[in-house]
Image 1 (cartoon, rainbow, N blue to C red):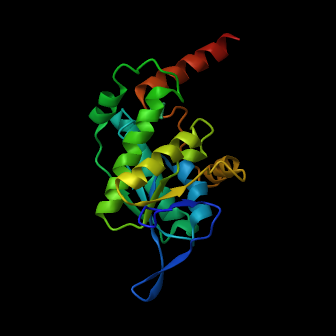
Image 2 (image 1 turned 90 degrees about the horizontal axis):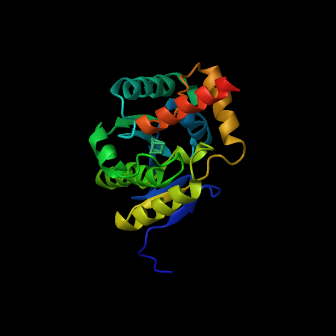
Length: 217
Ligand code: SF4
């Protein structure tokens, strides 16, 4: 193995501290997050292992009111949860035009289809770039906690970007160990807003159609 290549780390390994300039310090993790419910369990799980900054970069949330609602909820959660008291928060630019650009021709794709691959890539690319530019040691995303998200794709993209930006990527599948159920429990405990669609206008339309079909039965 070429030692100069960035390392892909497995979430099961305990990388708690690293020696930096002679001092033992937690490594700086940039954690891309999509919403408060998904972040809840991930922060509880990673707490104590890393020096964590949550990075909110989600141009896929195409309606501004929804975007603002989710930002407010995630910052409230970070301020309220005792296990997140050391966690920092950075917000990326809100640029839905980039999401519409990558979605061209893929508007009718179902959730978990090709549009979603591009959407993961857009968000993770900016996360890796920001991590590199701001002196983080590694990056990852909360997205793999959702049963609607393809963890294999997320990790494949993460590994590719870790090479592009020469930045470590934390391999993840936060669904494991009942991560998703725990996020629902935490959402109830903190009374978190749980949206009923993923984020883009296409997923909202899909969700409305699902509800209408349910009501017909
Ligand atoms: S359904 Fe979700 S992951 Fe897929 S493109 Fe829309 S916002 Fe992105």
